[in-house]
Image 1 (cartoon, rainbow, N blue to C red):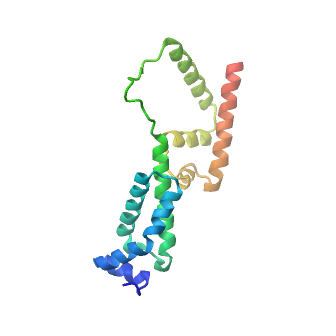
Image 2 (image 1 turned 90 degrees about the vertical axis):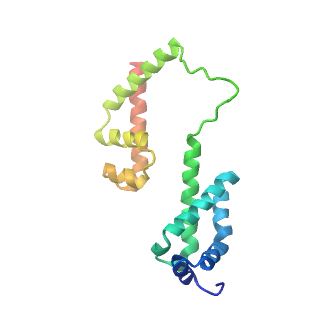
Image 3 (image 1 turned 30 degrees about the vertical axis):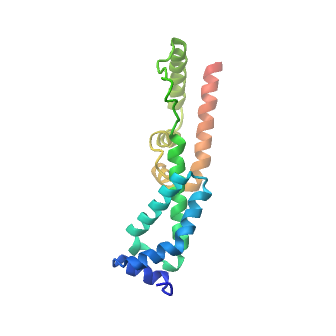
Length: 181
């Protein structure tokens, strides 16, 4: 098996040859692990990424167009999975299990929150349709990629970041103007 190229190994693995699958994993095991760990994931998260990459490969054995570039494909897949884990972990908030959280807001916080919410929505309604659509997608569909968001809005993907930044800046200015005025 060690003398066979990736195309042969992928074909054999697709046909159920366990030795071919083991050889693919043996050849690329350290690469996939290194990519996951290079994203500073915990050992547990890196192991999850590692496992996910091999599962994705198993699901796509016949879709690999360039078997000679399998290492690059695995690297890209591991990077994407690592970034997905980082995005998910970034949304987690640690809680103190020993001290019950007081979730009831005090009256002052309620009043300030309602005022801020009202000012935000009034400023939001003054934005252009494009800006409202971009900010809506960011807030309510964060799982979309830049490309998917750009397609939904109808702009080139490389314009989405700067356009989003301008929209947020206009929103900030309008909220500030309303506070001062």
